[in-house]
Image (cartoon, rainbow, N blue to C red; front, side, top):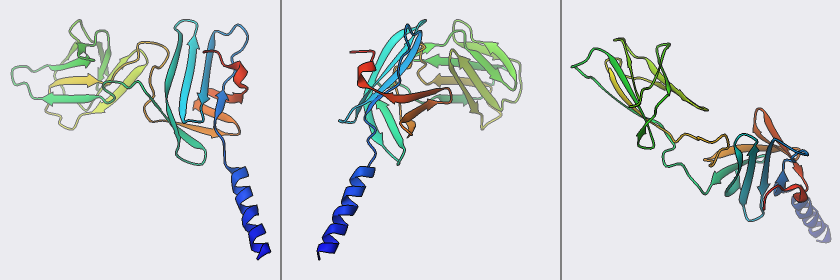
Length: 208
């Protein structure tokens, strides 16, 4: 009986010791830094993400984090985009032979967006509109600042399109996270292909 109690206690102790604790501060800013990112994961499953760029200033994004796999967490900020998904509406305009594409973002025309159809590119005017010569449209791609998206067209007879694009970040620093999955391994967090944050002491935190 004592043997089984000892074995159970040993297994319980081993389980507790191997449970991964992801809480803490990740990322250490260098001296006189021009660019810096830090992420603090708190024990109450909230987070704060600090991002600084010399040309864009700093921002602190707050939200909640959750462990979804053994080495993965997911971030969702309290602040959310009003429109997180691009929508496209197409129709046949029998009064015109040209291809018309109108880009709308947050209820306003998106001026200066690069719009591409079938490898032909033009820039949207003050009304968010671009006009192309008559052709069968297979896809439409828009690019504005750091946002770009390609939309496949399922009806090649359409010649009049309206794109209501997802909210665009006008700052170099992202102000929200929506289902952002991060991998944590060996006390480091992979933010993207170019940014890896290593766990560091909380005293290195750069914001209040």
